[in-house]
Every structure is written in structure tokens, then in C-alpha cells.
Length: 522
Image (cartoon, rainbow, N blue to C red; front, side):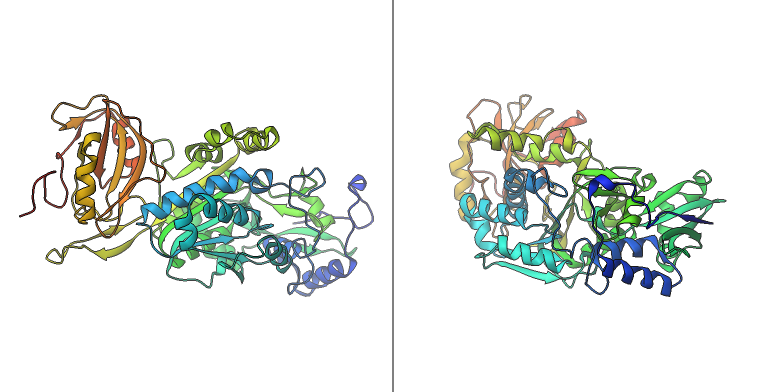
């Protein structure tokens, strides 16, 4: 089955004023013809990144990523600096949850202009100097042209380094920190397939007798065949209607597995657009902020961007198989949050209320509006095994970003007036390493501090590996009769998850390393 999709003699979009690179197009035609046709994913890859690093959309040197009307497309970091500033707060939270290590790696994959990296680093330098000093920022970038652009934007920042590589073949291992990406997997070349009699045919790109690119159905390539078993587990092919066209992001699957192997401890934070069922949506082209049918990508290879929607649920499930645990809540069981919801959770709206410049404020507010309603944030964590501080106990636990070492499954409640005593115990390093320290509003706490039913986490710190409390940065808690300090192995989301279900939470009373508050250690 063969269908022409491009005609070099006719221009269906003359108003766009697109200009082909004849040398690159000629090379691409010969490349496809010499191989007797290539999978669509390979055609998309060559169109975006060129042949042997030469030519292609991202190597053209004219790709315009920004916030002006004549830019090719706009990303959230280009829309407003408040995107990077808000992510900096999330990184502080993750660094704190990991016990504030002296070295904290942030690996940004596919960094565009370098704007997000700049805004994160500048925010940390001004507002969170401890993390700024611990930060080691690495950019993994496949496009040499974008590396040059990023190095200009980030000049004078000695702790930034570059790795020229693809994100799905990371030359990194034993990373402790965060892997970060914004609109990365949507740019991965995707395989296209068609359901035929309960099985898949793959769409190949060929060159017809007129020198035009055409589509042809064939048996699955080795790359697609290799993931069919895993794909069937989350998306049964035989149950799909005859002729259904599917978009399979194999590179995203490999990428998620690669992250699981590269990360020793920490988080994966993925921002992109799409949603469940994205496998049924066709890829498309983008030029001058507008979406166009895929056919224009055949008409103008190397000139327009080609992209696809991303299914975060598939990424979450693949990551879970590699030890990347989704940070889930009742509203986001797979760790997938609407991007505006994630940004609000880290105080974007409150920050914008303090912004006096109306233009900057309005740009920031757009991050919470309909322009980003189809964007998601996928949050995953990786834990590692460590020995307990108590050498007489051979028990091991998981050190994770949200709930590090669970030596005692308890919930210990204190009044605000107990803070001086807590600080005394903290200075002696006698709290259980890895516990959380939550300031909570608990209106139903009983007089003996033994149980409560409803409540809300106001802010959180944690207990470091040295047994000392790391109080929340910029701590400001209004004294109230229903405000308490809760020290527990359960993260904020886990605590609120328990309370949402309406059950009683039992408290073990004030407790730290076997000592009741105020008692001397025997």
C-alpha cells in the first residue's frame, strides 16, 4: 500500500514563505532511496537533526525559540522567567528531602536556548545560596547549534557543563539529584503504525519515481517489533479497530529506561504536552506558532519542526519498571499533574501577586491559563539502600526524596511551644534520619496528642543523615491553637492522602530516637 504525500512541483502553503535547503533535501532523498525506504521515525529524525550532524531543523541555526510573534514556537521558560523561578523552588524541596547533600546534580536534557537553566541558577544564587553552592548543572544536548546558543546565554556560570549526546543514550551513571526536561519527548522521532487484522503494519517513507516522499505500509521494523510485547501490556493492539493509526514513541520508552539506570537517587521531573491516549494522535508540524498537517513535513524536510503528543501514563509505567516511583496522590495516581497545578503548588500564583511589573505578572499568569491546559508534569523518584545509623540494627530501608529511611513507622506530634526542646534534641543529632518534619493544621487533635482525623500540611522540613532537623527555608508559621509539629516517616502527600480517606491517624506521642521529649537518654 503506497500513497504519495509530497509533490515538489506544488506548494500547498505559499504564504508561509518556506525555503528549502536543496543540498540537504537532495541528500535526504538519496539516503531514503539507497535504503529502499526507511521507517517514519528515521525520516523524522533526519529531518530534525540532519545527516551526520549536518542540516536538519535543529542544526539550521535559524530556529527561533522565544516569546515574540515571529518566533517558531514558544516554551514556558521563554514565556516567563517565573517558570524557572518556580522550578527552582521545587529543586530546593527535592534537595531538602534528600538531606541537603553537599553535591546536587541537575541534568537538563534538551535545554533549548538555555533560558530555563539561567533562570534556575540565578534564582538559587539570590534566594537559596546553599543549594546554589551544592549545584552541578549539566546540559545534555544533541544539537550543536543549540549548544552554541546555550553557551552564550550561560556565559560566566562555571558550574554548567555540556554533554553532546542524545538524551536516550546518556553517558551518565550514579547520579544523585534531578533529571529535568521541558518539552523533550515530544521532539523524539516516533514510529507510525496501522492496525491490520489485529496486528501492526509500520509506515515507511519511500521516494517515488517523481522524487517525492511517499508512505508505504510494511511489516514492523526491528525497533518496533522489539517493544510490541511491552506495548501490548498497556495498549492491547488486537482490541483496536481495523485501520487505526497509532503513534509509538519508542525513543521515549528507551529514554525512561535510561533514566532509571543513570539515576542512583533523586527525582525525574518531566514537563510536556499530551495526555492519556496520545498514542492515537498523529504527529504534526509546527511553524510560526501554528500547527499544520504532517504532509508539510514531507514537503519541507529540515525547515519545519515535527512533533507529537506524549502519553505520561506510559512513561510512568515504564519508569516504575526501572525503579522510578511516581510521586502519586489521590488526584494523580500515576504521578501525573496538570502543569499549572504543579506550578501553583510551588507558589507561582503567590509570587505573581508580589510582582509589581504588570507585563511580567501577566506573562507569568499565562503559565496558569488555557495555553498550558494540555501540559503535564510527571514527577518520579528513585531511592537507594543504605544502612541504618544504629549499627546494632541490621535492618535496611529506602532512602528516597519523599520518605528516606523508615526506621520506625510512627507519627509523633508536638506543640509549637516544644520547638526549643526539639532544637536541643536536634543539636544532639538524636532524631531518626530521613523523617519528615511537618507543620500541620490539625483541628481535630485530641487533648493527649494521641490521634487526629483531619488536617493540612502548611510546610515541611526533614531530618538529615546526621539526625538533625532541617527546618523549612524561610519558616514563617502563624501561632494558632490548632497548629502542631508532626515528625513522621510519611511525606506531605502521604500524610494528606491518609487524611483525605477520613481515617484516624494514631500518634505515638512525642518521640525521638527512643526518648520522650524532655527525658534524658539512658
